[in-house]
Image (cartoon, rainbow, N blue to C red; front, side):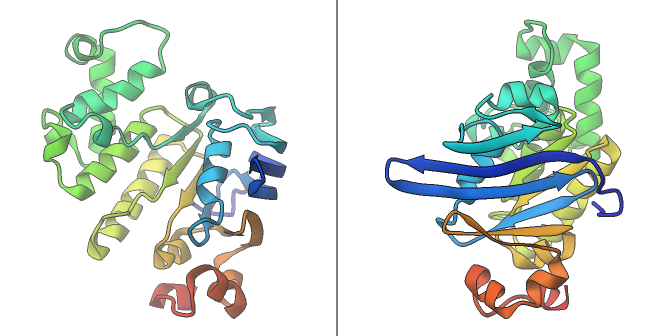
Length: 264
């Protein structure tokens, strides 16, 4: 994604806080994601990344502050309603339903966007529109030859692509990817990132939010990096500014970063 088209604000949080009793998970977090951006959320374990993602995708209602998508309040509305409005999060259905085929897994997302009450498995076989859309999504992610394969039999990289394909099947304007390359070999990570970015362009996705630990990937593909520490925003910078600040880098990722991060 490019920052050149970053104009209209799609997602915005203003002073968002989330507390569990006396524990403060998020403290006055304000950020915005504009059209054309790929914004990475980074931070050490316990920084508040998961809580922020759950707030952004409507799973959690913040204790304080505002969460808006395309100017509308989305606090706590839930991922199903949010997907219908145009923001999706990777499902990881592969891990929930390992006996489903690739076609059935993608069809779950497609059918969820309709108002029809369809039997999932019969819809894959009998509904021409669902079959066509399943085939289109599978082709984008290089899974066309695996449509009848049970997801448990896929390689780890293919499982990740299927997880992401399920989210893309919702035809979102904004997609949130939580650790899309975790468990993937270093040699395959860039391939997966390039595939999903190409898929986003082909599908008309307007912005991507990425939660990722691999700083080389963050450096190469991000428009901006939002760093959390202790539930607060420590930095919100473009990659070149982020990685040129040794204090920020040390606080978030330690003193050593990869080659790509050093050259960002």
